[in-house]
Image 1 (tube, rainbow, N blue to C red):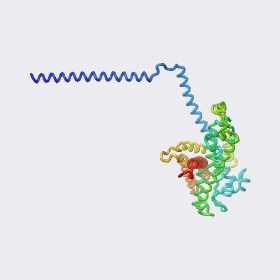
Image 2 (cartoon, helix red, strand yellow; image 1 turned 45 degrees about the horizontal axis):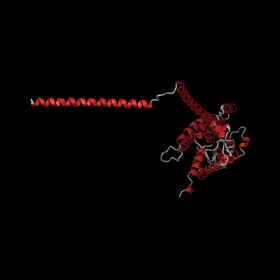
Image 3 (cartoon, helix red, strand yellow; image 1 turned 135 degrees about the vertical axis):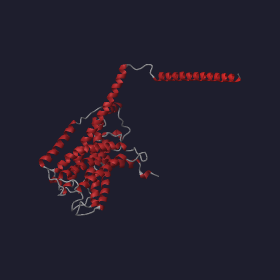
Image 4 (cartoon, helix red, strand yellow; image 1 turned 180 degrees about the vertical axis):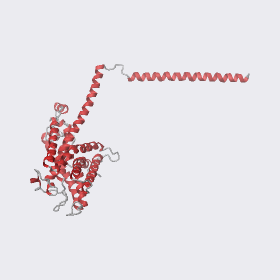
Length: 402
């Protein structure tokens, strides 16, 4: 009987404990449901906006996405156009200042009567000259000057220095990107410059002078210094134009009125690149005609290079987003360095393949030269490199460090 009482008491306690546990669980579930309902009611708007307002917001989002898409394509079009202009300018400027002075590499066309008399630069493969003043030196000088002119001393300055601040072209972002990134970046080249210095140090391409290590080292120093001086000269001229056309940038007493600010910021001006695209098509068609009708392989190299140059410039433009992304060295322009490094390696490899006669035939050599001129030359840049070097020096002057 004693055992039976103990057993009944244990069962009773177990049943009561289980009932209490079930009741507590039910109370916790009710509390959680009440809390979730309270949160849901607090998050949900008791007065939702009308359906027409919601539709307008959705249309606005779609419109913004379409605007971003169109803006990106306009930037790509401008980059492609000015890349072709930059490559064409680099090719003919190189010929004008010394490229046609070598009888083995001269192009005897409409420019030859003038270009073979102006022998300022050389490719380092002639009997009379070394190559410290390399073929691409004038291109790098002009491109650095132009990017200095359109950059100025401050990002707050109007992009085009010789126009008023409220001119419609001041708001044409695609045009500014095309000039600074595509035109200046494709007009200047680090890869071709580096390839010529490597050829000079090797000496195989010049049986007359042999190895030219000293001239190559001077070529690096002269090329960098001339580009930096040209960039600073461009910025100085930009400041002169800005002081003349936009004096409020230099005089705090002269400020723009609210209406002028509103007109400048809200003025939407879209310069259609259709005329520029047609001009580029005509230019490439002329190169093809010169290749087919005149039979000059140089023009075949040009029209292939013009087709390749936008890809190099767009790749460099995308790589520029890596600038400042290196957490350990945020000041280092990683994207520009990768573009110059990749372009230099590619150009050197193509040059070696051409000189080792790995690709037989004039057609294969022309294609290699076109890829080096168009893609590798546009992928690498001197103007942007010089711009970032000078701006880094201005932000962190050594004479201010203690």
